[in-house]
Image (cartoon, rainbow, N blue to C red):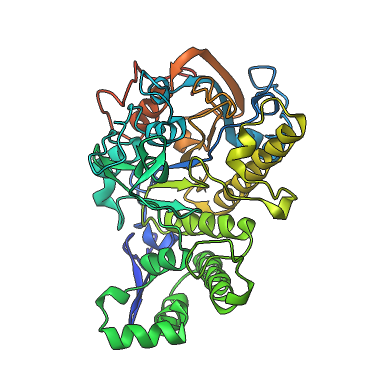
Length: 450
């Protein structure tokens, strides 16, 4: 006779202290003794990462389809993850085109990326786009997690006024739309994200909150007593998982505090609020790390990441490019400018590769977070010089909990709606809208069965 003595923790367990509540990662102790595989199946996460101003497509697109394709110069940093991702060619966003509305391709691209809807041309308050794919999932499945969705960004922008030829700044600032008139602005300050995920300052009185802000007491210090008590009751495997997770939380805290405690190092040209690292590399990695923690603790299963907003004039001095990004994208065939743009494109891909590696390093049930995720990376502009919206640069990473077959370059018929991809991914997580924007049906060939 087998005696089952293992302690059982609820899946939504927290370590609580004064002004802090830390969600726990998935632990063996959260699995009921002799639980069935179906009952303990890891959830599938859905994430979207957006890059602006188009791509130098000749350095992006593989020449061959199938599983034997060669990685191009821009995609080369992702080669170690070949078996974890797909390159998708031929997808388009018809509704990002002018359609008689004239200039404003950057605004239309940002607003259309996850909605597939042609936004209303206005610089006023009467903005209108569509409900984005991520928010369709958030509405349907969001009640199962602490946050319905999380929106991250690495470039702050206003949400009102004219940002692109008569289009509101709301269109260039947000890719996530809760309703056709309600964009979800991304949070660009990592300290604000961290406090939202792990703090409980909103419930404290103003004096306590101010004292906490001055001292910047570690979140982990606030729950140290509970941590020691819990750790002592766990098995060796769970103790290791807990230690690794808490170490990651502490490291993120330290990086945020370093940025806040060294204001003299902040680039005077940066308009971002305090707490943002000096280098763009560290900034993006920090925001990606926060997404990993949010998925690891099942605080959310849906996220978006705006690496930089459409029309971004960010410079990239750390990789030797002091020129503003958007003007460079209008290269008019200038070989030097094209080379600089390709270098920016590759740099963004390297940072995305960091995110995928971190996701793949975290054990999650019978696989990793990446195995149980579907992550779209791309843009709604292909050629930034001509503002084209067909044959878009698109990557799909992760295994989708077994519903995807990565490791391939798939070439679709020209003008295949990008929204067909979203319709398929949403179907894989059990969300089944009749349509998303201009979708015409589900996308084939993402698995052995379709």
